[in-house]
Each structure stands twice: as structure tokens, then as C-alpha cells.
Amino acid sequence: MNIQRKELLVTSFALFSLFFGAGNLLLPPLLGYNAGENWFWVTVGFMITAVVIPIVGILAHARLQGTLYDFGKKVSPTFSLIYCILIYIIAVAIPSPRTAAATHEIAIHPAFGTSPLLTSAIYFSLVLVFVLNRSKILNLIGKFLTPFIVIMLLAVIGIGLSTSTFATGISQFETPIVTGILEGYQTFDAIGAVVVGAVIIVSLNFKNMKVSQFESKRKLIRQSGFIAGAGLFVIYAGLISVGAYYGSEIEVNAELSSDMQRANLLRGISIASLGEFGNTVLSILISLACFTTAIGIVAGTADYFKGLLNDSQVVYIITAIIACILGVVVGQLDFNSIIMVAIPVLLFIYPITIVLILLNVLPEKLATSLVFRAVVIVTFIFSIPDVIGFLSPSEGLKTVTSYIPFASQSLGWVLPALVVFVLTSLLQLNKKN
Image (cartoon, rainbow, N blue to C red):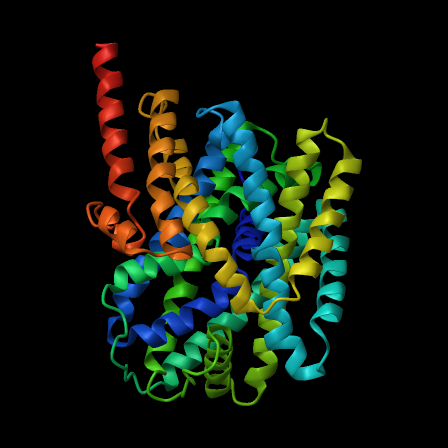
């Protein structure tokens, strides 16, 4: 079955929009601003965890065409069940409410002066309406919302670069690539890949998409993933570079919280690019980008628990309602507070998610059940010091982690996981021979 261009574009735009939320818009400009002359190397690191890994996750979904449960079942069914529940709880408890917090702080409160409670209540009521009409999600987001978001983003970036003096400040980062990698964690894009990828799979199963054969869906998802990834790359690189080149023109008050620094910088860039109209553009842009991401997260969570409990539509509705209520409650926190809560969670769950994504795109002979178990266990063990070090740093822990390569950059799990993967693969090969 040939994939029609219309279906490809709709799916690509929808996938891009489900990825692109609050953190994706707010994090890159300040990252570039602080990176200054080293903005290119920060961009390289950021792309690894915010573009490459998430798109590999979509490719894994294209191959599996199942649910998130399929990502971890080679480790063990129990592990996969626990992992899935953790991922979906994290998704509805942190990134989903964060979209409401960002929308309130940047778009709604400055214009209307409303309370976070009112903003979150209206916001998640609308999210719930869209999620309960999920058969229309792909078409609505892909045909209408995302093109508008992309056009506005490109306008801000293009006009911003064309009017910039191209003068950068001094970098504040000792290791810009590593800083970019860790900042990419906060986009939640790797977690987003395994969550919204499942949304795409389910949505493609609706009759109006006209894609039914396994290979046709695989081709569509893969091509959509590459197109969405290219879009994310252009937007991220543009936002980071604009932040870097406006470093000498826009004053960011270091005494403000990180979220206000991000908001003020992005607002300054928008106004410098589009005049006072830039404020309106920014408000609309933030609202739409956050809203589409929240829809994807809530729909993905409801889909999972629906499938877990006998494909019950009642479970889908109840899960969506609970996720939206949780979003309203947590959405009372400010954007920066949610990020601070998220960091230790990300240091724990992100490495496991990354290795599961990478293992699921490898050939079966390289990614056996033994390899899955060994790599995930080692990744889990070597991620623990990063979490403890963030929550309760001590000299004793520093002494222990000093023997682990890259541990000081919160990447102590990388080399052990790679070594175990190679050794386990060689062991399997020797046994086979």
C-alpha cells in the first residue's frame, strides 16, 4: 500500500507537535544565552538527548508497533509492567502539569492576571475534551495546530537571526556538550518518544487513516519520525543560536528564577524580532505548543491503562479524568519548581529509557533477553549515585564516583552499560558458535 503524501505530512506534523511542549520552547534560548561562544557544542549535546534518542524511539515503535510494554518485556514481564506504570505516572505528574504552568506564567497571567488554579482548570478541561475525542487528535493537530506553531517559530528564529548583531557572550559552561546532553533530559523527549509513539500507533489504527498493513504503518511511522526529527533539529538549533546571538542585547536578570529568566529572554527575542506583536505571538505559541503535548501525554496514558484492563473504554475515560485532575493540582506549582522536582526523577528513569530505546532498534541477534537484562540492570545500578548525589551530596559518595568515568557529569551509567553490552554480546556469540 503506497503511503499518501497527505497522511505522511499529517502524521509528521502531529508527531512534531506531540513532542514540542513547554520545555522544548523555553529551554533552548537560555541554554544558548549561557553557552555564548560555545553555542554550537551545546547544540550538539542537546541534539543527542532531545532529537536523536527520541527519533530512535519512534523507529523502535515503528518496528514493534505495540505498546510501551513491548519496550521492556525482554527484561521481564514484571519489570516492563512496573516500568510502564512509572513512566506514565511520571508523564502525567511532571511534564503534563509543566505545560499548564508554562502557559499560565508566560501566556495567561501577564495578560489576564488569573490564578494558577483557574488557568489549570480551564486548560485541562479542554485537554480532556480533546482526549475523549481521540479519533480526531491526529488530524486536528497535524492539519491545523502544528503548521501554525511551526510558521510562528520559524518567523521568530528567521527574523531574529537576520536582525541580530551576531555577537555572543562568554560561555558559562566548562563542558558544553555534556551540559547540552543533560539539558536535553529536561525536554522529556525520550520519555515522550515512548509515550506519544504509542499514541501514533493507536491513532493509525483508526479507519480514517487508511493505513492497515504492518509494513505500511512501519514505513509511515519511520518517515514521519525522520521528518519530525528534522523539524525539531531546525527549531532547537535556531532557538539556541538566537539565544546566543542576543546575549549581548537582552539583559537576563541573574537574580530571577530560572523559569522567569527563560520566559523573559524568549519574550525579549520575540519583541526584538516581531516588535510588540511578539508578545502576542509568544503567548499563542506557548499555549498551542504546551496544549498539544498535554493532549499526547494524557491520551497515551489513558491508552495504556485501557489496554492493560481488557480494552475498557470506561478505564480510558477514568484514566483521562484522573490525569487531568492531577494536572490541575500539580499545575499550581511554578515552572521552575516542577523542573527541580523532575531532575532526580530524570536522572533515574532517563538512562533506563535510553538503553531500552537503543536496544529495541538493534537486530534480534544482538539484543537478546540476556543482553536486555544485563544492560538494564547495570544502567539502573550506575544511575543510583547520580540520583543520590543530586539529593544528598557527600564526600564519601564523591570518593566512590571518582572511580566511575563521567560520573561527575551525571553520566556514570554510560560506559558500564556499553561494556556490559559488548561483553554479553560476545558471550552470546561464543555460546552460539
